[in-house]
Structure formats: structure tokens, C-alpha cells
Length: 343
Ligand code: 6XA
Ligand code: ZN
Figure 1 (cartoon, rainbow, N blue to C red):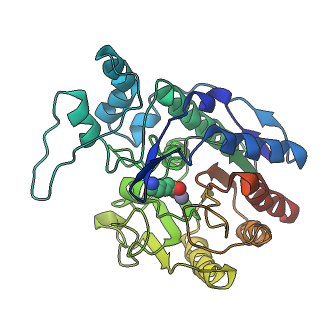
Figure 2: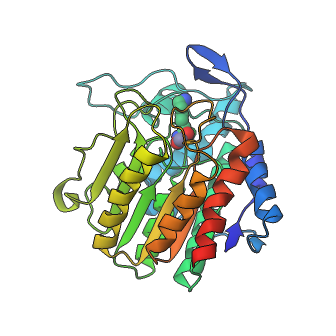
């Protein structure tokens, strides 16, 4: 399959994130994408292409215009105040507050985020923008007949909601691609999120809609980030009722436990009969991931690729998390090579 990639991701490199009460170097770092790209080359997965530029409009089909404009202008406003360090929010609206958007940059950072887990530097907007273009180009190739494509996006996207960032995510690459598929004529798209963390942003974007089915397998929110979403009883709302599926699993879950949830998610997706499948491909389910608690082995990612191939659907893989940097390339590309071998 073909891989879509932009070197622009390198412009996003922040200094620190909060982890277990300490400011630590960011786990979400440029070398993650380098390792995956190296593995794509090493395994001769297929051609590697730079994305075309589809502009801002497809981003605003899933994110609010105010939010996208905020992201675009945020660093300039920060730098005008003489600030040179990474941007981080410091306040959020408390419960029972009808939040009004403040005017100053600190207030707006809180207004447009759900945690302090998405630091921004001078190049974050550009990196996120081109990451979304990577997903859009991979999507366009699926719409034109590619059986499968790999969007090597960085930064990741699945925590970004309609009008907020968080958890290393700014623009929801998978959701932007899903909406673009619908806009180019698809009637039904399924998103399977296999990242260790619940894809709360993707869930938020499509929660009230029946045209995108969302299924996510992840660490139980009672124990794991993002802490407040991902319960099995979140099934969608209104017209979207019955089109959202969450599979929260306990810490320590291995392939046996994990693949049972996968089997169920696959039956749900097959029953929905989508025209295209989007896989939010995080490999932070790996046993040595530094911030996660599942126990998948590198070989398990081969099984995952085979299982996904059995659905027989045009499939867009979108890179999400994975922080065991030494193994991230092997694990992510194992899914793709095993998928290709069966298709
Ligand atoms: C909290 C952990 C953020 C996890 C981001 C991630 N600082 N999401 O991998 O899929
Ligand atoms: Zn994750």
C-alpha cells in the first residue's frame, strides 16, 4: 500500500508534558514518525508520497471555524506577548459554568482544550495542518480506488474534538478523512480505533450521527487517560444512537483479551456495511509502551492486520499513538504488511 507523509511534522517538537506530577520531556516526539517511515522503507511497503494541499475547508467540516482560527493564530498571539516557551493552558470552566470564550490567550487556551496535554510551539499549527493534509490525500486516493493507504500523521488526532485539543492532538485526522469520504459520496464510514486510549475526540465529532460508526478498544476510563470517556454505555445520541461502540479493557490486557473485543468490534462493523474503513492506528497497546498498560507483542500486530483485512473493505490507516520509539515502526508496519499479504 502507499504511504502518505509530510516532513513538516518535525516543526512540532515541544519541551515538556506533565506526567505523574512531573514535567518530563514529551513522549510524543518527531523520532516516532522517523522510525515508522524507516520501517515503511525497510519493508518496501510501497510508494511514499507528499500530500497535496486541500486547504482549510475540509478541517472546518468537523472542527468549528473559531477553533481552527484559534489554532492558526495562537502562536503569533503568544509570541507577541514576548513569550518564547511552549504554550500550555492553565484554567478550564468548572462544572455548572456556561463557558464564554475569554479574550486573552491564556483563557482561550483553556476554552479550546480539555487538558494540559497538548503543548504548542511555533511550528505546531503547520505540523498539525500538514498532518491533516496527509490524511486527506490518503483519503482521496481511497476515494479514487486504492484498496488501502497509510496516512503517517504526526501529531496524532483522535483526542481532538469539535472545538478542543488535548492528549497530543490538535486536528482530528481520522475524523477529517471520514468526513471527506462522506463529502465525496460515501454513505457510511466506520472508524475502528485500536489506540490504547479512548478516541474521545472522534466519538465527540460523530456522536449524534448515523453516517459514521465509531468503535474503540482502549484502557478502561476508570483507570486510564482520558479518564472521563470510553465507557461501554456511551452508545451515541439522537440519530447517532446505536452507532458508537466502546470496549474498555482492564490494565494488563493481552492479545487473548484484546482480540475478543476486536472480534466483537469487527462483527459490528461488518453488520454496518460501511463503504470504507478508517483505522485509528495507535500502537501504544504494546507491552513496553512507557505510558500504557496493555501487553500486546510485536507479532500480535500481524494478527491485527490479518483480522482487519478479513473485513474486505477499502481501508485507510491513520497513525495515532505509540511511544516505545524503538519498536513503533515494527509494530505499526506489522499491521500494514500483514494486511497487504491477505489483500
Ligand atoms: C496523558 C496521556 C496522553 C495520551 C495520548 C495518546 N498525558 N493518545 O497516546 O492516544
Ligand atoms: Zn494513545
